Length: 400
Image (cartoon, rainbow, N blue to C red; front, side, top):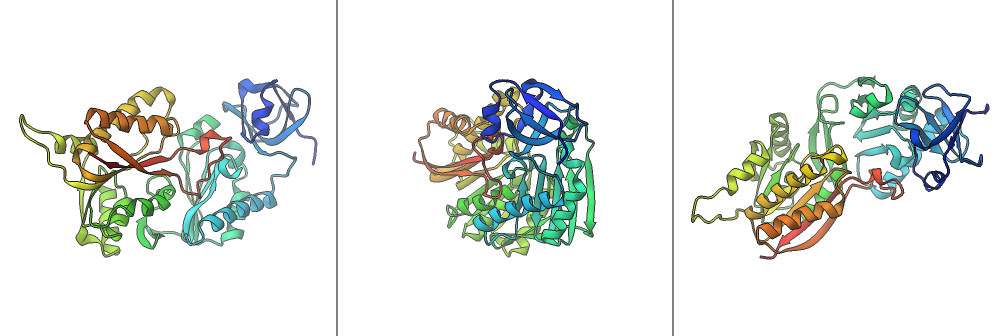
């Protein structure tokens, strides 16, 4: 390997890098030798010239270096094939029966800026860093060699790309794909469109939680809020719910969830409504003077999109979570279960739980926590990289 340009970090920065966090910000850099081109591989050393690792450089980004390995490496086909195979082995170990899952989860799998989702025999690639974007062909070649997929699509539409100096990029990279595909999750079929659907097509991070929440469903009247393609609601129906009412503001998502219900023989148990969930909950909990609200549901599921994309908006997000918790608790029957989720990294589990407990206090309800949830094992959490942990959830039983 030729001598790489060197990025020297300031005193006090080395420990975080040695512990496994791959991001080196502009303010952490002492100096750069032999100024590299954006996207080049560089070596990172501490102020005493001790090697900390190698990674890709980008002067346009706040993250000046994304560390990829603790030792000197070549960013060639063999490197990407090895990393992707290692990531796949983790999924095969922890999700042996899954046929659709996230293959590569960026920093969680030591490929900062790369996400790969597998939907049966179709792969969806998302790249959010310049260094990986410049090596896209190598990543594609490695994916073809390992999976021999029917098609590889790109959905590199994340807003973070602009901070790397990258434009959005999407389309079919290899193979052919026309229209939606049928994805199997826990034995149920879900129609998803990886070309035009939300994000890369489906919320794979909830795959295990769909089943975990469904254990509360037998015999229950269920409300699935923010239902998207029906993941929670249809698993509840399949588990033996008496009825399931699914709400989402997207008419396209509701139509797809109706088709999914029919495809799984669950349509008779399910009803669907296209609506703003906040407005629906307010309308259902509104009472006239001296009118008593009669709870209707034994299991209520709240899985909203992220309410916050930065720390500044956390207070508004917490107010939003408290609002839906308060309304949901009023609709929940005694001994019923509220399963609630938050997918924002900026709202940690303690803050999220506090929003629910504050709502319970205002509603004069007492809750018993019966389950705690996280993201699926195909979205690994590396504790030394806090950004890898974002999904949290709880199930609470209404005691009285």
